[in-house]
Length: 102
Image (tube, rainbow, N blue to C red; front, side, top):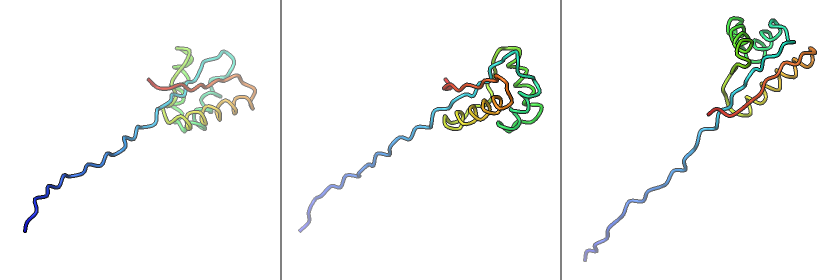
């Protein structure tokens, strides 16, 4: 006695994991914060070298703004807040904002 049974392979659907959306931290230029202080903030908060910090600071100075870093949303918001808080403690109106990367 033999039985004819067909076995169909089962497919398991893997859930698609999307990468987290990235956010830009943007340095806004102002006419009051000294360039040296901006470079120090970029070095300490964003771990930039002196050269990279100077380049980003000069880009913001010339263009009105500069993208400092692109990273996950929570990291971007934390870094921006840390940098703004440092500037406030020193009495400067330095601003960093975050926005989604396109």
